[in-house]
Amino acid sequence: MAQYKIPVIPGDGIGPEIVAEGKKVLDTAGEVYGFDIDWTRYPHGAEHYLETGELMSEDTLKELSGYDAIYLGSIGDPRIPPGVLEQGILLTTRFYFDQYINLRPVKLLKGVATPLKDKGPEDIDFVVVRENTEDLYIGVGGHASAGRSHGTAEIVRNLYQVKFDLDVETDADEIAYQIGLISRQGSERVIKYAFELASDPSRKQHLSSVDKANVMTDIYGFWREVFTSVADGYPDIETDFNFVDAICMWFVKNPEWFDVVVTPNMFGDIITDLGAMIQGGLGLAPGGNINPDGVSMFEPIHGSAPKHKGLNKVNPIATIWAGAMLIEELGERDAAQAIIGAIEANLADGKVKTYDLGGSAGTSDVGDDIARRLSA
Image 1 (tube, one colour):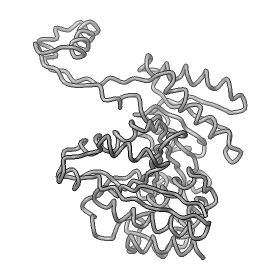
Image 2 (cartoon, one colour):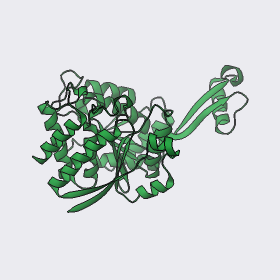
Image 3 (cartoon, rainbow, N blue to C red):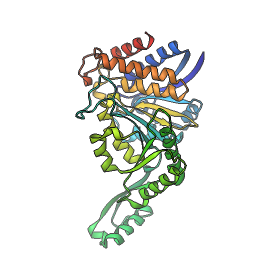
């Protein structure tokens, strides 16, 4: 029997509840498909931070590097300013392990309603490959006031003055800036991953690229240049370019056009929330932060929903589905597909569903039902 050691970070708010259901289903899958999971809990989140002042230490990261995959619940707490936990735990982990791919399946399952008129499961079935470590998320930015600029702020201020021929001291006495960066290596590796995914025989052999090269010509024109270069090595894959504003429109109007979508970091962050809505809501949207040669991390894409904490109310399906992605990354493909099948059977039956899907079942009820279907 295969043995896997998986660290789990339940996190904040509803995190512990939804992770408990994910573990339940994964343990059931192990019983059916012949593998065993040894779970190791890590306390990192709001309570741990408030008690100890620790977010994610170097020692903890080194310890996590001994695993292949991490299972994450949710991060965020109203007692702590926005960004502290997210940057100190989530982004720190992503960057430390160079999880340069954010993988987001956008798939409408049977039994789920979509807000899109006349669209069904046959129309909404694509995957977004988001670059996960570059772009405007590199953390270079700040504020500057007149007379107190220095370093990067002074460069930005001077460029602004030259560009618009302004007296910065009077017309722009305070500025804020955020610098985005993409590299050839960083772009190539995520674009190649997307091409390989599009080459899978189960897919439509179609890859769509997202950018805003018509306005942000330097940074996203470069992305388009790299995409074109990589595309030369995949002559059998159909490709197209999409501006980010246009692809939001086409996701709604014609989602059936898409198969695999590859995007820079910020645009991917935006369009995957739109993708979650057309597949039925955040409660059904899993995500993976992937390093194909290192440690990956899997999570639902929704937040910690602190107002629902401890109520056994929220939908655990995104977390259960993220667990399926986790074990597929470990090589348990059949078990992963069986979990998704059990999720879809639960949804199609419609008897055990949470409030967001129009039902009254509890979080644990849904986990129990999916585990039962998996073992039947």
